[in-house]
Length: 382
Ligand SMILES: [Zn+2]
Ligand SMILES: [Zn+2]
Image (cartoon, rainbow, N blue to C red; front, side, top):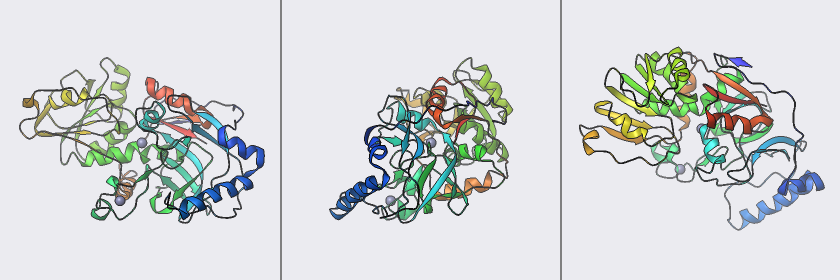
């Protein structure tokens, strides 16, 4: 499948699914027994206050056995397995996954650069899916909040102290089926195909939050021109900003890609742009980019770090921060970010450059992301 300008990758054929670990029990004894065991566990856990949530329903009309790709252990390859169909709890939707975007956060979880809170886990938090009543929805990274902490009560649910995230705390979309809290599912514009919509749900959406945090900066630097940057570049140009794209030194292919998506200048991260910039967003996970970006900012300029993980930031002279320059991070998203961004996307309109992979090639998609083998976004097509 080819969308936009990047080459598509469709691998046909499928390895047989493997049942392992506790899921092997499902194959051996059947899903009803497993549901009973799990139901018993949930009842016990809820009764004694061990977990928050809803017990699994006593019965379900869904047949067992879906293909999924799971991370069993960090720093180990993802594996295709057969899992019991997930059962939606109260307030959750059962979703048939069509596509799921691949995010650098999936790679950080795979590579143990951020903590895995649940193993095994189904990764993937940019899910485009259909509900049982055939509505198309998007499931983003923010999967659940408590609604009552000081952040939730002040419009900052992205910082909720008890937040649960899709594809980390809740099984995600590298699977045929998923469940998601209906309140956190986002409507998707009809103009976007399943493949084009998926990368908007994290790269686009959290990139948009980062862009908003740059205020009215008219000259904007983007460091790391991958999935998020190629979408946010288009939004910035639509808003009348001028974009300067920074790639790995010598990466002329990505610099050309950046110009195709609207950057007026593209160079290596060690190059000086022709003008001082008002803001820079760093999508790459290399901490040394922070002092480099500060050095090319005009007074009062802002560096926004948009990733969930970054290597340590080296020390730098205070003079580089002086004159009211600032460094800040962006964390997660709110539902209102999601609604605002998805309404804006067709107006720009945002083009996404997508390389597609079948579900069983999810590990390959992560390897290609790590190695920078594609431009734009990778999307799993289920
Ligand atoms: Zn909260
Ligand atoms: Zn993400």
